[in-house]
Length: 294
Ligand SMILES: Nc1nc2c(ncn2[C@@H]2O[C@H](COP(=O)(O)OP(=O)(O)O)[C@@H](O)[C@H]2O)c(=O)[nH]1
Ligand SMILES: [Mg+2]
Image 1 (cartoon, rainbow, N blue to C red):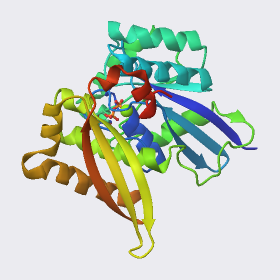
Image 2: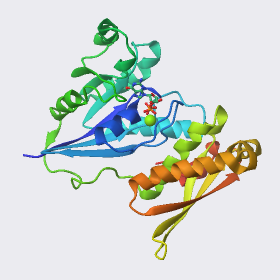
Image 3: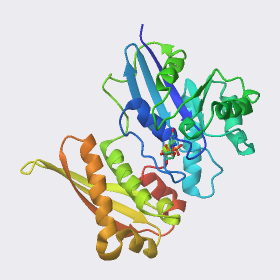
Image 4: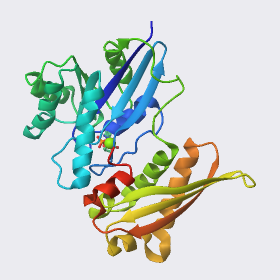
């Protein structure tokens, strides 16, 4: 009998939700970075193993939003709970007052919750893990509590076994070789954005949107020609992105292309363009157009 389930991955920004998704699927499905609020919309990663199909929903971190984009990010995180069969709450430290927002939402959902303590590779002693566990124990009746390291891929088998107990008998939702419901355009623009996050600081990473303007197969050269548009909020940010003699933008383009080539079978030619669109993060139509409003 086959089993499947939608598993919402929730947690604060930066606890390692997207890293965990990629580790579980074994491919870069969602981009990751040390900067908060890297993930802007929900991303599905699908893992089919024998009779089990896990449909993971990676979400932007749940947080109190300050601008239009933040509101849409927080909403997509809480909406993910509506479609889920079970919740994986990822944390990387002891319970804090700021965890109450998430705690209340998972309680309201009434769904089974697996608490995942991530980044145990950073802890020095086993008793540090116990201390974190204890701080959550009286907050909720968790169905399971599992310490892992997404980065080092420790205890992921235990985690999958635990999750499989909460899958629901029935047909699989997706073909078994299907890994994500993201479009190719979305995966490419996210990879470009990941490189931008890596090379920029402060406001710039948060002010950037990337859109694939065109994709054309060049049958002579057997390449895929991709034009991508990078949108920023201010002229000064455009200058920072392009860099001296265009060097930074060139580096971003080269590294993004290499990553894209790993995923897609065709060799990619990538052209990047930068445009200023003032205050786009507060403009609902722009947020929707860049795919963050869904
Ligand atoms: N040491 C350590 N770092 C991790 C682990 N998992 C994720 N990280 C790092 O935490 C940061 C945030 O990760 P990300 O997956 O983008 O977090 P998200 O915002 O929750 O999706 C990145 O720098 C990751 O490399 C882990 O198991 N151990
Ligand atoms: Mg993320």
